[in-house]
Length: 237
Length: 77
Length: 84
Image 1: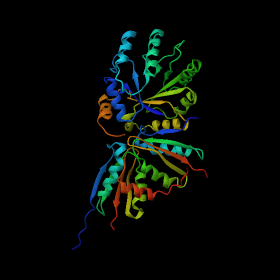
Image 2 (image 1 turned 180 degrees about the vertical axis):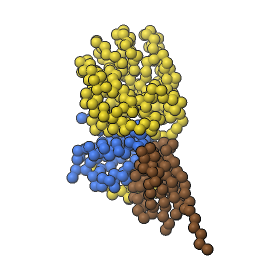
Image 3 (image 1 turned 90 degrees about the horizontal axis):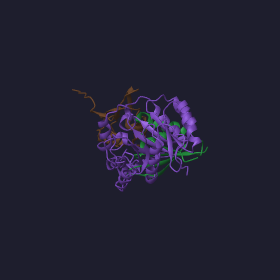
Image 4 (image 1 turned 45 degrees about the vertical axis):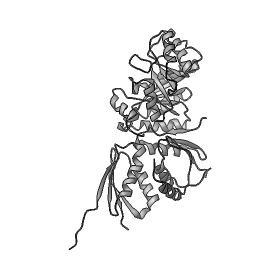
């Protein structure tokens, strides 16, 4: 599993700022929402020339872009344009609604929520089109739904959007996140998980967490040595 | 199957150790998962030492400065 | 005349501290305690692992670990450093 940062956490952030924030937290990639309110530089306009100019101007040392999250109900023409962009960036595309004739050659993931029925439909679409699924999880979801959804998408699941993570994680009383992460680990999940805000989250809370608070180190050398002597774990290697 | 990896950085503090122990208890003997954390999980190691004495293999794969990766295995009887 | 004094108590609330820094914060406070001193520890999860850490690194007899509150939101433990 690899952790990513969604541009939902910082819509006004440039790609450079998103990269800085993701690096501070030792994350592996970015998920960028294609939306007029986001300032990462991948323009939502359809002009391919302008789009390519924007891509050419992306800072060279940006964090890998793992996914582009497309708006709802994109036309096939728009989808083809973004497929080209994604291909040039090495990114996948997250679709919010299924398309009947998706382009080949680009990694596609259909978004679904916590409803197992929706997950079944998304997995069926993904299997028909040699594509994947993206599960948008609310961190206060009923944990009893975890297995119901995972059992339907274990083959197709490539990305998870974890809403209410990051600085909001400690506020939830639901055991969902811990249970979900454990199940994903035991299933050998090797996809991505993006940190994203819950609906209505405080953007200042996220900004402080991304740029100001330190850490999500232990002891002096002498203490480390004492610790090594204290351990009596059997060596399984 | 791909390697089992558990990145605990995003798990709320209250759920972290219960999630790790639940994952460990679900392992088959001889199997393992890789724990990923943003600091050395020393208290966790002590907790394994006392609560699962003799059952746990602990091998550091990475020791910072940003990420610690520990191979936590269930010892074969 | 015999006088009795309350043990020096340090209140340590690690709930606002980033998880990455909690262990060193607690251990640092423990190391700074005088013999007979008490750490009044406030955490948002069961600090059982700190009990094991102190037990392993300092020995059973060096401390006592008394829960005043055990969740579901807050755990509060009085950690006393024994004299001698």
